[in-house]
Length: 506
Image (tube, rainbow, N blue to C red; front, top):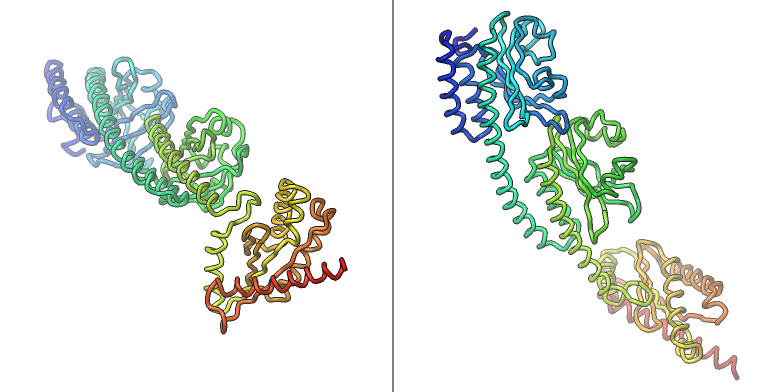
């Protein structure tokens, strides 16, 4: 056993309590958790053998204990170990425990790199401050009968002092963490407020959560609809990034908690918790996670989640921070949604819901640029025949019904990749990409058949004149060129319609 693992000499009771006073002064001046844990270990090793030593912190609400510091043969280990607190004799009883031999037979954690050589004897004591159980400390030896009752009493005294110091350190670190978090969230809020693009907002949310909470991954899951319990990954980032579009149907208590009660959820073991479906769990693999509802306009629109690849204790402070970030994200998403709605209104015809002339110009500029590179493009103009007569005879309400019905037919018969817009009054435009003139005629024929069958237009005999123009790279260079060509063809069609009507009336 290295000399550093044992006290230099056997001390008297009086000497030990003077040591306790020294330990109290040392610990009281140490506020960093890492430094404090090392100081507790060092001061304990001055008066007790500590070939093995650990400090655990305990969350009573979740019965979750985590080894935050342990040393084996004077070598400090960094890995965190978690276990059920009620499985520990010292935590369960809140009393110090002395094991003189065969430590592996007791409900105490034993140290050692393999089963052939593990610690044999131990003393462990709970850390209790103001009636609150904070955790436990344990000193262990590879030799049997290394400790007696006096040693146990001494460790209990050290544990009492350590509890006060640990509680103070946790409080100070929490204040500092909240200060830094407040600064970060304020900065994040400014960054989110500067973006009106929902995709950019979500990307900033992901980055903010990963930075503030130092987690391994964060995802934004959005609901499929207002009343849907199916959420899908809309944005994800970090070392554990989930695939875009991954769906999770929230059920039972999980759905109630997130979507109805609108409260946070913590899952300690993502790999084995039955609430996580297999197709989602395979992407998470292991670790711990938490989620909070994401709200826009007073409604739950999704879930913001964060996770760690290793088992981790996500407490109330973590979920509260995630909820604050979700609130920032909600405000930013609401602003982006309102902006998107305003932008959509500025590009949408309010009567028919189709794109308006401004949106048509933006779209057609892009299509003409592609047509100049060789992509086929045809523009079809539609004009409702004698629409003024319809308005004068049946009234503007009936006229509006006809315009809406006609716009819907044009949109239904067009391909989703193409665009139909209201050009003005009773004129509409269909942009047909990757289509020739023959394809445009087939499209027009389908529209006319639908018009004849329509319950609004069919009985009133509403018809349309059309103009077709195919982009010609030899004679056309701009959007106006193809629109003018289609307009000229439509007027020829309109003149033919008028001539036919006059011939029929004579």
